[in-house]
Image: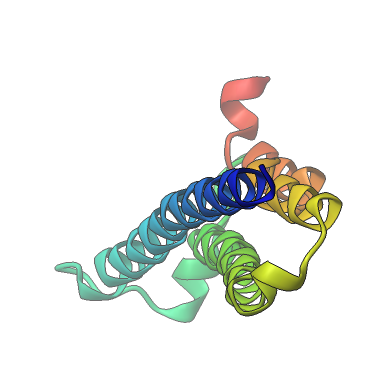
Length: 138
C-alpha cells in the first residue's frame, strides 16, 4: 500500500514537472519571438533604402510616437518577458534538483508560478501599446 502511494506521488510529481517544462518552453518561444520582432524592426529601420538619422528617428507625427520610441518600447517588452523566462527557468532548475525533498504545497505553489499569468506589470505593457496605437484608440 505504501509503495503504491509513493509510486502515485512520484508519477504526479513527474506530471507536474512535465507540465511546468512545457509551459516554460511556450514562454521561451514568446520571448524569442519578441526578440526576433525587435531585431527585424531595428534592421528595417537601419537597413532601409534611405538611412534615417537620429533626428528623423525621434520625429513624431501627430499623436503617433517616434520610431525610436517604438523600437525602444519593443526592446523593453522583450526584456521583461525574457527576464520572466529566466526567472521561471531558474525555478524549474532548482525544483528539479530538490523535487523529492519538496512538499506538495511547495510544488503546487511553484506550478502556479509557471501556469499563472507572467509576473509582468500589465500596466507598463498597456502603456506602451496605448502610446503606439493612440491614434487608433481615439
